[in-house]
Length: 318
Ligand code: SPD
Image: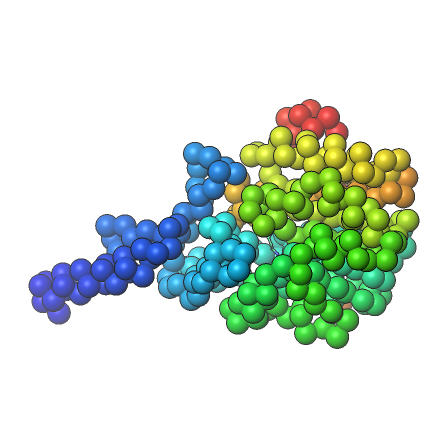
C-alpha cells in the first residue's frame, strides 16, 4: 500500500471511529486512532481509569440509564452503566465471588432463601448457585435491559439466570421489599451501582429498614460499599446507618481488590440483627466441586478481607 493510500485509510478509520464515539461521551479517539474509554464521575473527581476499546458492541439508553458494552483489548467485554464500569470479563470474578461468599459462608446456619437486589448481570446469581443447599434465589432488578445485554455479551456471567432455583422480578427494590413477608430471607445481597442515579436510594436508611424487616433473625445483608481510598465519608455514613438499623446486631466492612473499579479496591458492608457475630470467621464451606471453580474467594481471603489498613480503620472507627 502506498503512503498516500495508508494515510487515507487512517483518516477514514479515524473519521469512522470519531463519528461512532461522538455520541458516547466517555469514548475518545487519540492521535494514533486508538479508541479509549475514560471512566469519569463526580464520585472520583480529578481522576479517571482508562481502557483501550477494540469495538463498541452495544449502546442504548434504557428507561433508567445509559447502557454501553464494548470489547476491550486487555479486559475482554466491558459493561458500563451511566459511564461507570460495572464488570469486565477479566476481573468480575473477584467482586462477584466476594459479595456472595462472604455473607453466605459467614452464616451460622446454611442459607436456604437468598435475595439479590440489583445484580442484573447475573454474576452474583452464578456464585449463589454454587451453594447446593440454597433452595430459592430471587433477584429484583430494576432494568430489564441489563440481564438482556448480559446474556448476549457476558454468557459466562449470566449463566446464573439458567439455574432452576432462580426467580426474576423486574421492579424497584424498594417496592419489592415493602411487599415481602417479614423474616423471609437468610441472606440479601445488594449488588448495586454507585450511590448516584438509580442506585442512590439503596444507600439510605428507609431501604435498610426494609432489608432488616425482610431478613430472618439470623439473616445477613451484604451490600456494595465503595472504596477506602475514595469514599471514606460514604462508608462511614453507611456504617453508622447500618448500626442504627441493626441495633444490637453486628456491622462490619470487608473488601477485595479489582483493577477496573476506581482505585482498584471495593468494599462490602455486612450487617445482621443476630447479636455479636464474627463475620470474619467463615462458618460454612463450599463443596470441593464448587471451591474448585473459584478464582478469588477462599477461607483465608475471607478472614483477611476484614483486615483494614490503619488509615481506614482509624477513619471508620472500626
Ligand atoms: N464503581 C462501580 C461499582 C459497581 C458495583 N456493582 C457492579 C455490579 C457487578 N455485578
